[in-house]
Image (cartoon, rainbow, N blue to C red; front, side):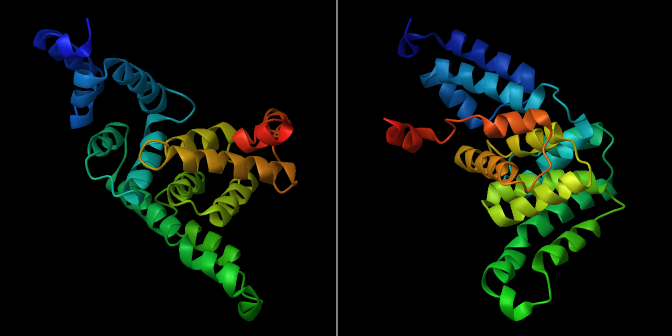
Length: 238
């Protein structure tokens, strides 16, 4: 039976399944269920793997990053992440730290400008060092590991690749696990931009290949894998 001929009862049953999994519904769930049920199924599977299934971050840490991402993208409808953060042990101080981490990461544009356009005139002032020093002031309300994770995700949302690289270098230096960094930036995909996530992965890979980052053997293997340049690379290869 096509979506156009589906019964109202079947539509409501499909939406009930989505609501049961998430605890809420948004208007786009209803539209996809009505017009494009296969798209809803694929979207639901992707969202479940991205936001609901346990990966490497604890629930508390994952929600901390979510809060920063949502603040950076003005995503006002996602209030359930506040409840989820508190349910995972998040405190008011933690909320403040998440928003502070987001604000500092969004403010990286000023340091990026200084590094890009005024570096010679500002020397010996180092915009990168000044930015990373500002990030550490968020502690002790959140460990620097979480500040890095939130900052990485925010830079993906904002497509600020120089500060993204600063965060990566600092995160490696501070011993942040690579899989945690990977999960954090993946959270930016839906509210931020899938294309920006693609660019972030390419930038991370580039920094591994040029020796900037002390990547693990697993991540070195990913970086060295050829043929990751997309359509343009494939066209040139023919």
